[in-house]
Length: 370
Image 1 (tube, rainbow, N blue to C red):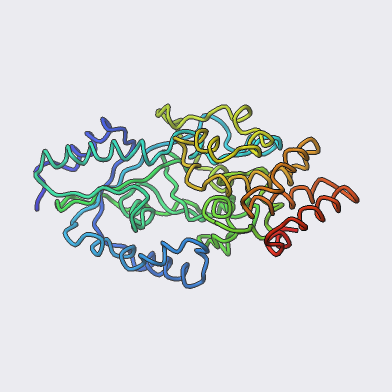
Image 2 (cartoon, one colour; image 1 turned 90 degrees about the vertical axis):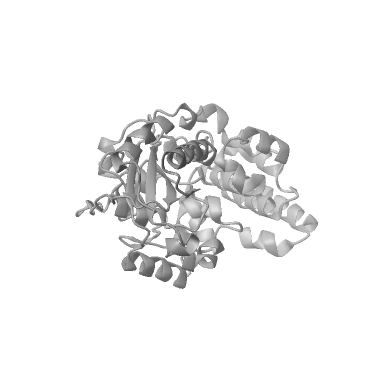
């Protein structure tokens, strides 16, 4: 089906629906990008993210997701922060939250606008569409580079000449035949800032990530016990990590987001580690009801909080940690013991360990933490 409206009309109209940049490409994934994702999964770099492996064939071929697709409209929404994303890393008493999760869940905000924009396209063209944002098996970043929104940097994330590291991506698949935009080229040059700053050395080499060592993966996607050799490197990051994004020189061109719902909340007040360590399930759900943080659940979140407390060696947090030693969740109990292990010493620590192990239903879980 040929388009009854021009590409420029679609791009201009997209601004009315809250999109900052819109480009168009065809539904083909470059061979090099197909090889990358297959090698990534073949090397087990995906860790617990089984959904990557499960839908691999559809992921590398958009037409297997929808056979009628002829063009893909790739959209970007700026979530640029109004502050240095790394400024809270020095304040050890609060938890550091990734920029994208400091406001309301972007899925909820963008999807509404995406559907409205999609309905407008259908009304103008009588075409068929499918809309996606971060939930379908789509290689969003390669498609975004192919469409010209930016390029995949050495940290494997998208970099934009206009918005730096801070773009949410979405896409509209359509059976319209639209003119494609020019693919963006790599502008990283000799810069290795993102690779060198990674606290856990998660990059095998530039452009190659082992997600199992990535703090964003460990604090969000990983469901179990965080490996002992990586815990101290997490610092006070309790949900995600922006280090590799924040140091990119292209951020000098980044713009602050206009979307108020993406704005940072008062972290010093809301993300005090001691207060967070006392959250029960109901309070966690209420506190993060509109946040993407809710998806990891209270137990994994407390695991992260307790690791941050241990790393900060907060002496006045011992009573807060003790309240979690007999929590219903083994992952919380284990993280609490580990945190105390970083703070308490001698006889005090031995008494706590003996008491917790004597009442522990699954001592092996705790021993993995100690």
